Image (tube, rainbow, N blue to C red; front, side, top):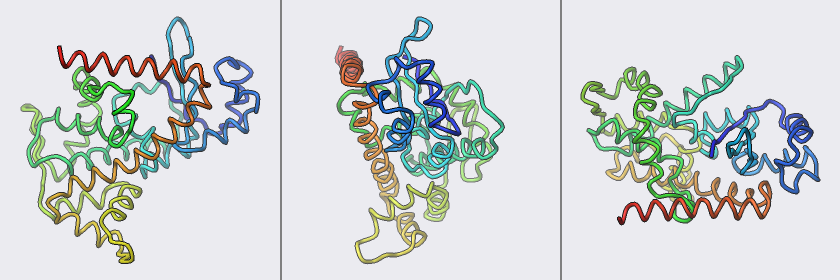
Length: 289
């Protein structure tokens, strides 16, 4: 199933026009009109999905997100929902000259590399890096336990290594903290406390706040920089970062999945869930055979 995301400046107007053209794509929520649909869109990850839509002989799903909400997620990882999808190779079909959005897309990729560095050892392969990056948005997602093929990350990375390289090679070559041995497909990073502190300070704001809430005991109220300096010296620094990411993804994935019952309707929700369960079972059978 092809997955589309439309970033729009005015969600109410977009849904109003889409209801006129493609009313059948919507669940019973179409009865409440574009304003109510946009209100539901703003909950959780800020995206509204129409799923299991037939288009030119293909099954597709498409999500609608406000441009401002998208930029917020790309820069700060507020939900890491759409930002996580855009850390993997995607095809941008059309894009207007929005400088803020273009800068946010690049910032999201840099943040993904930084977070992955903190969770990897001192020396690792390019594929290890891309596996770590591709797995960021699935950390803490309950659907990886129930409903998703557990080989999903591997299946994303293995056939798409050249696309990941195209997406990230410039960032890796320009990063002062990494030795990028492109011909060998190997990387080495600075794992000193000083190096890790610089990386922690470069993480998106929401992730820094999550890490601080995990590490800082109640009542201490130390500033973020002080807490991150402590984490940089912690042998389990990578685990703490992973916990922070999981905390962001867990809440957003739960809310977004709950929304699906409304946005897709009961019949489509059950059909979609059954397809996911089939893929997960198929993946498990592949492993055991």
